[in-house]
Image (cartoon, rainbow, N blue to C red):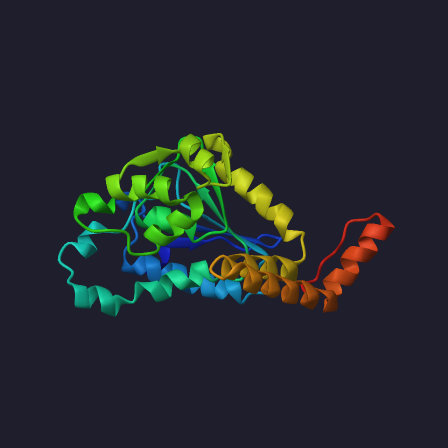
Length: 261
């Protein structure tokens, strides 16, 4: 195993179809450097194409989900160099992953770490977690969706409070403003994310994929266009084996066994 391989550890895919991706740079507070971004993109591309995987859980460690971007890589970089890195292509592997992605956040999720969590579909936060976009304190601004995803998640006024002051919000505040899905005791963060992932892994994969795609795409469309997109996806699912299995299981009063077809 190379040094790069140790930066992000992907567990073996569990028997229930849940894969766990853990960022592992404790000496740098799990800061996102180029190697970590590339490794995350590679792993998510692989998991997206793996039929065994139903749900993905992304996590860090007990103190840091991700403390932000690696400042050492930004200190001397110029605009052309930042452009040529094309980090947006690496983030897309997570944001556009067709499978449900759950972030299990303990400790700090700051800057790129907060943006990384917002690329996921659900966020399970420890009651000790802290979120923030403090880039303004370095004379810059978020560059991986922070200004856009945060406004969409929590609204203009809370988002701009975080973006324009660089303040941190605790898990209770994050839950109240809609930045996280659930808040749990610190020691239960990963176990709750895995429990939720296991529940979702039992659901029909094609329906989950369509729900995710329509919800995300529809958010940026006029209502009538979004409703049309929803109808088409709804109708498409009526041609799946999983729809037939779900209806049969309902009438037979048994657990459905979805195959993703």
